[in-house]
Structures are given as C-alpha cells and as structure tokens.
Length: 130
Image (cartoon, rainbow, N blue to C red; front, side, top):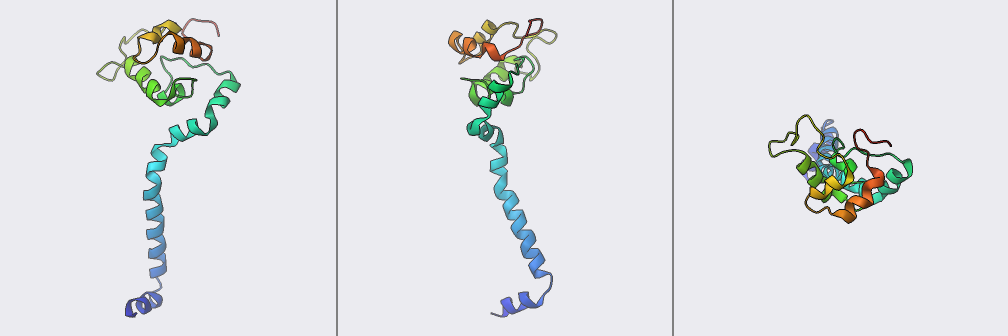
C-alpha cells in the first residue's frame, strides 16, 4: 500500500513503467522478426512473385528470394545457397557461375529433375535470353 502511494506521488514512475512496457514488447517481438521471411512466404508472397514475371539468377539470389519459388521453400533455398558457397563461405568456383542451366540445380541435395523443371520458368542464367 505504501509503495503504490509512493509510485503515485513520484512523477517519473509512470514514464519508467511505460519504458519498461516498450522494452518488454520489443523483446517479445524479436522471435517474430527472425521469422519474417518465413511469414512472408506463408502469407501469400508466392503468387506475387509469379504474377510479376521476375526471374532470379540462382547464382546471386538471396536465399529468401529463392524460397519464394514453387516447391523450394526455406530448406531447399538454404541448400542452394550452401551448395553455391563453398565450405569457406565463398563461391565454390570464384570466377564462374555455379549454375549455368536448370539441370545444374540437380546437384543440390534435395533437388531433382522434377523440382528443377518446375522452377525453370522463374530462373535466369547468365548469358541466357529472358
């Protein structure tokens, strides 16, 4: 009872309570921010990619962009990125593109001919006409 009277009489107590509430909300929002790319995929980002006609170069696209392709998702997108980059984190073939045609993606674990043919229309390779 005395503490509540003390808080009411102290003018800065309401501001510090508000700051604590904001800090708590920010801490609780961190896991949501980490899942943002997955949430974008879950809430319909795929049709937008298909409707725009944008083609991705699998040699340079970010994993979250690759995850927007049909039948790819986050797991295979990460696998493409990992394959494309060597164990040291750099490109497996520094001065050349790892993927020059859709069939090259078959070398990525988890991707086979059916998957590579399903995403062919969404890919652009260096030197190939759009």
